[in-house]
Length: 124
Image 1 (spheres, rainbow, N blue to C red):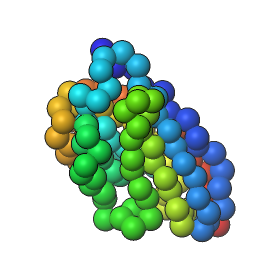
Image 2: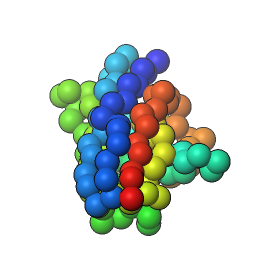
Image 3: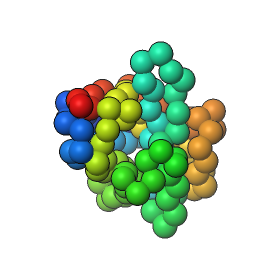
Image 4: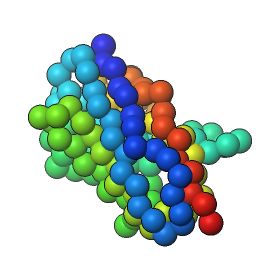
């Protein structure tokens, strides 16, 4: 079992930056591929970014490519999402997810553990 706790959400102006963190506890963190997903009001949850267990490969949704960066620190059992040049369309609840495989995907049904989410609101 893996427990995930996100933090770092809040209110930010368009064009600004925010860094989300997700701390994992339970099983060995560095055996898991990690992902970030988000769900805006009235919309389906969507993939944002993912990172392999080693951190050697990252994968982004087209909507955030070049603006967001996913990274991880296995010594701290933490994965990050650095969000730059945010816009109002980035407003959503952001979820951290873990899958019991070193390989990552964008499909949420392949992730086994989820955090409770952290709200990000971007004002125009």
